[in-house]
Image (cartoon, rainbow over all chains, first blue to last red; front, side):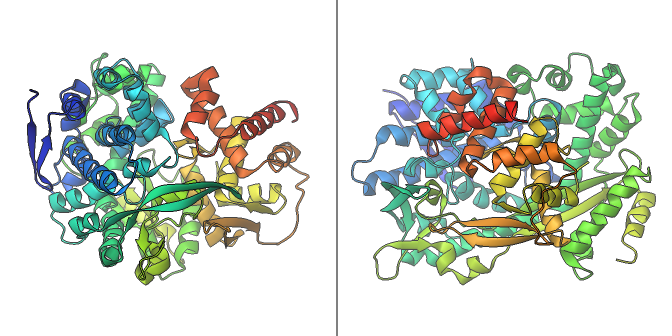
Length: 447
Length: 163
């Protein structure tokens, strides 16, 4: 009799892996080196520099996403006539492994790696791991013939292919349902609260029409929230949106991310120029080997711990840029933020910010700033994407049951709160010192 | 180096009007892919090659009144943007015939066909080689049909030979 396995989790309490072949297989995935690596990648990267509690790992998040996906699949199984157990397994496995392709410090490293090595997001690395000659790939392939490819396709698909795909990728997917709760708790912020158990308790399944362009292609089952969950759904969308501007886009976190990116790009330049010995790292250091070869093997040797440890070595580098950035990151001497969007909000808004960017580009071209004096940062967040009905993308919507119990509507159609939310944008510069700050501020004069 | 004016220029090269973010992104992608772009960097996102920088520049171009963005809603309820040159003129851009020729070819294909062709082109250049179409079909199962793949392949052929 296979052993039942248990994990205690701060968000979900007890997460069990039962004796079924599938759940034992899922437990086996957790024990692979590829999955254990996620223990050494923090979910929020540098956010810990601002929110000291935010040390939670992508391992914990991934287990939480699996647990949530299993709950969603359970609702589908209970409410959908002709539920497809195999598709449910592929979706739950995809939920479990969806973050395997994250690099150290997640998005900061990903952005640098796109420029240095491979123009892809972390999902592509996840797919490489699933399809590759890896422990994870072998375990998935061993579950049943072709299973690893089924899982890879759930992750690779650009829109959810069916109700099971929407568990993994939609505006109401297991990923978001876990990280909104987990990140809020671990950061210690007190907004972003929503009633997840009430949302799940009010889940229903309905048929929605699908079309490709103007050609109807039938109906497919989709998740719909009962009307009683309307306020909980609003709170969920609003909570997620708030987290972006209070936590994920925090100026100190983003400053550290931009500094790491600048450091990695400088490493790339040194490697390209044949001067990697100037960076302070030994020649076969995993970071250098990854930059040189770009292979999955070296990618999987990278994690937050490797990068943090490398800062100490790079702090003695011959190259002054590497030395300064590594030292400052270790000592948390971060570049200071100038929030251009906020400063110019009442002085011309988006047009003034765009004009500032143009002036900045001219100043940089004229040599006003040194190569690492000033780091730019743009980010946007759309609170809720309006997807078309009767398109494959309609499986990405949050659908609310109509008051009279018939049919459904998009959350944004029935919620004045969600309807009123507008895309949020930031543009900031992070400056190396007071002199650079004064130069940047002078660019705003007269605006 | 690309700037907000780059977006207005692409719109003008397209005759002063360009329908949809997908067409804007894929038009800029093909210009880069053909070596006559504006220095934009593209990476793979769910909808194929995508430039985050271009998205920001389009916002800046709108803020600076270099373009107008009209929002429309399809019969299915999906919102989409139409980018319009602020002068409202139909422009043939005789000073840039090479890029204009590429956009003229693209204008004969739907946004979905552009997306499929750009995705296959990107995957072929980034590790998938001859398996790029097979992989494109897997990733875009909801958009794939035999006719669309054939049209997208014609698009790539025409970009290679018609310029």
